[in-house]
Length: 536
Image 1: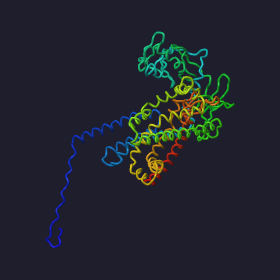
Image 2: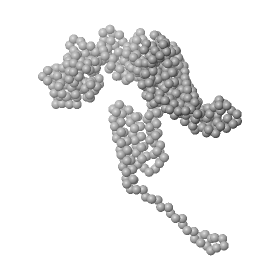
Image 3: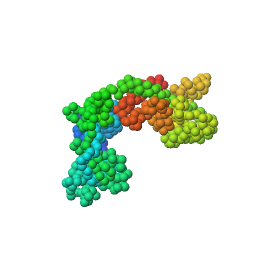
Image 4: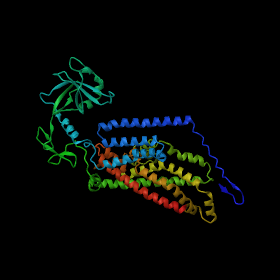
């Protein structure tokens, strides 16, 4: 009951209830079907990914996979935790595509992972013994058929051999030898397998195309390995180097020389310090990082490359910005006739594929038939000398990059109120003073984040160097480090170079690059926020 002053008591009327329109049944049913389908796809992917994890005994990864799948099912099958339903996909993709690669790279940087150090110690022992197998008097010979479990041209090779004494058929690969059920194979009177369930027997022509792979394949057995002798015969050879568990060493059966296992370097090392080529993966601590500073053969080239990397990134970013800004300011005036046509023509380099233009510019800088020397009547070896090669790549970057800066500067200029420039002219400021005191600071507030991202991109601009100079020219005493190499191209050559891959060392340099770019970007973004506060 409520009482009004000076009037009779009255009862307050209840507020009318708002009627909520029921959700259409068809829409609700469709959303449920989509949700069930997507969750079923998640479960299917999780089951598919679990098999390789179980096969490799990666129990931690399997536990994380199971926990993630269970969490997603709980999250989307219950009506609670609405904000998390929107945050979970982005967070998961962030972890998978950014956090995990960074962590994996960082973990690799503390190992000796690379050519000759990819697997376990047991795998290294098997590789050493099988590589030393030779045919000796009395070696058993087999009828051989080469097969595959995949495509005849690219699938993994398998040896199908027939024992001459028992007529038993076995299949062998780098993992070992296993017997086949007689009912699953077809064998000729000469012992050659012509068909086998689950295998595609290669014809003579198909096998001939893969003769190098067939010759290199060794099937490990006790005391040796089975290798091919041509395309139709195989032999069981004896290992010339045998592992002795008693001394934890590899002994050469012919010379008696031994190589003892060294767990710090992940290799078998002889008395004179020589190592067997095949080793295993071990943790090496900070040696990949200290190697950059302590190894004189690496520290000098690394520091030179780092200095040039900064020059290239700053020159590419600064040069393209200055040129693009000048062109944009010049065409911003309404008194320029045909400025729309000029803008279209100036953007053409940006519209063309960069990788194709880089190859064209490389040919234009050719000493003998390049357009640059032909047009100017010069005889400059542009890409053959360190100084001219660096100038060449900076000019190419200037041509490729200024249209982007021209576009973003044009957009930023159009967002600046014209009244500001008019007011400065009324106050007596000239064109240069108006630009320097008003237009340029406002441009920098808008464009500094883009300049930071451009610097980070150019710091790791692999294509610009590799497609133009391939990092060269190279000094005769250091073919691994060229005058125009960036850290990223130097890292690529270390990881995939002809002297053997060094993934651990390349990962360490990648960490250096990450720290350098991250530190510079953080400082620059802090300065950007200060500018925004000043000109806000």
